[in-house]
Length: 229
Ligand code: SAM
Ligand code: CA
Image (cartoon, rainbow, N blue to C red; front, side, top):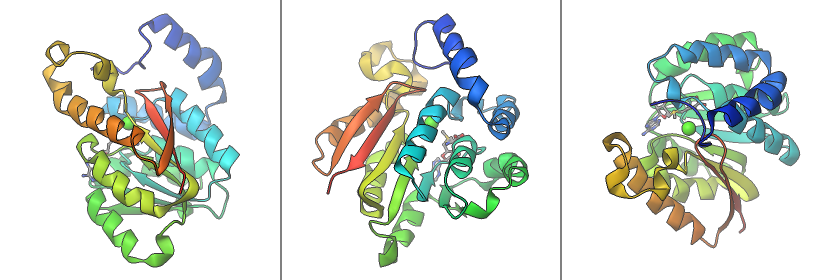
């Protein structure tokens, strides 16, 4: 599967990256992106154009206490760590520590590891644990959800309780390689299950009165979600 945004025109995507994104991308993020490029699952890394928008919103909202589900080699994690203030925190959850260890030396070198609490766990179990502590409820400024798509709705029910009112949740890959707008028959086998999950999730989110959303067609589609009450 090729890793190029949703834009149908390669030249335009290349233009966006080369003239607008790469010139302002911090050096450690370039490093982690280069390192990830040779990994067999490289396509899972967050697209730098999406990263640029995440950075903008993190800064504008002054997010400090953050949560990430789905770390992989750490592009979005490092981006968050570089962007939040010196005393900011990230609870980062992934079922696979080996992926995190790939990017960790770069995170260490960037001097931001002290902001990260990495938890190796099934995301749902780690969220339940966080919810056992009342102090965590309604206390996160920002959540980035990028783990298994089939569980997005389950994550949403937990995450909505952790994020504060007016806090933001980013749900990544909500256009699922553009497959959401295609018929099931025309979609490659490898995308089918994810397509069904994402379609169901997108529908549930738009009907959820607890949130207001903005769909950003960056990367593979990101739904920016604000908790309303
Ligand atoms: N945000 C990452 C980045 O910027 O590179 C990409 C995350 S990748 C798309 C998805 C990650 O979710 C993988 O590292 C995978 O191990 C993790 N994952 C998948 N299922 C999970 C689960 N049930 N609980 C926790 N993590 C899970
Ligand atoms: Ca993703």
